[in-house]
Image (cartoon, rainbow, N blue to C red; front, side, top):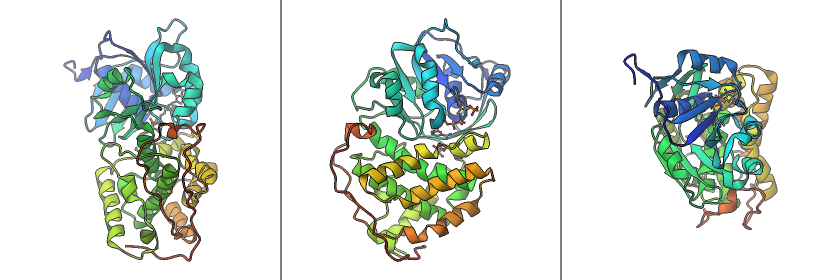
Length: 403
Ligand SMILES: NC(=O)C1=CN([C@@H]2O[C@H](COP(=O)(O)OP(=O)(O)OC[C@H]3O[C@@H](n4cnc5c(N)ncnc54)[C@H](OP(=O)(O)O)[C@@H]3O)[C@@H](O)[C@H]2O)C=CC1
Ligand SMILES: CC(C)(CO)C(=O)C(=O)O
């Protein structure tokens, strides 16, 4: 750090990193890597972000912030660019395949692309780069870009890193070390478990955040949003279990197996179990109150919402497994309608969604127990999941569950 409080980010002789996308996540990751003296190049297709970074540096606010960090951002890579050991993909899911194709020629032969996207993007990238050259990076913290080059860390948390097949990989250790200054970074042999836990969080929090247009602290204060959150998460847990996924917690956040609504929860008017689940969501809302949906941020910039990569994964897999996912389907449709209408998001939209879906959600079901062992093929839809007893929701009369 120099006397004016600006990190210079001097070059090291370690691995070469390329960060692709300099929005909330990519900008903050690039800032930490520059500040740590790593050999890093930041690539963005957004010329305003590149200009801001190149003239004023990466300005990071919030918890565990490196402050103002000098670094260079480019809008393209020249043909003579030396290959990168790690390509950290930090675009939104709808752009990730195109971004990966564009930078593939710059990946070292033994290097790896790392997926920071929410959703289940690893198999998509494996088809582009080959499964051996893809590592999963579950981002268990939040960040937003307030204006080009200005980043706000919106929550604590770290990363969960692993391979799709759960095998050890020597490339994970230097990566974990480099990302360690951002937050606790752990390696897993159950990447699918961490991915699906994060997916349950995104199907509810990112999508309801895009519809509601506010930060998590405001959203989760409302009982109808907590109830929708519980219902969305329950559907994700059902589909995950039927797909052979053993859920793994990310950064000490929610235990999805516990929070999923039981048959008794779904039909109860009030119960200690429901009270505890609402209380946990209230606590999450307080702890992570500044979190802002990245889908909301993308829509504000006129980008398509990533909802088909989140709730869409649940509705399409639910369909093929015979599991009803009416709330994820309703959320997916509502986000598309909002994006098409170009009207502003609002809490009223979430309330209307809640009211409209009451007749769909009170069906009891027998939730199968979590699998004893993680299935390493659970991330790849091309490998058929192990046979499991399918569960279907039965339509019953609506009940008026509220705490
Ligand atoms: N924000 C968060 O709190 C969290 C986000 N994530 C995940 O991280 C990923 C990134 O999120 P976030 O940073 O918030 O998203 P942003 O939308 O803020 O940033 C993505 C950036 O990538 C740029 N971009 C698009 N295509 C390319 C390309 N081909 N090459 C280079 N840059 C490109 C976009 O340009 P443009 O500005 O023109 O749109 C944008 O600036 C998402 O997949 C999200 O799922 C995970 C956990 C938390
Ligand atoms: C959970 C959340 C909201 C954290 O910011 C997120 O991952 C996203 O919106 O992409």
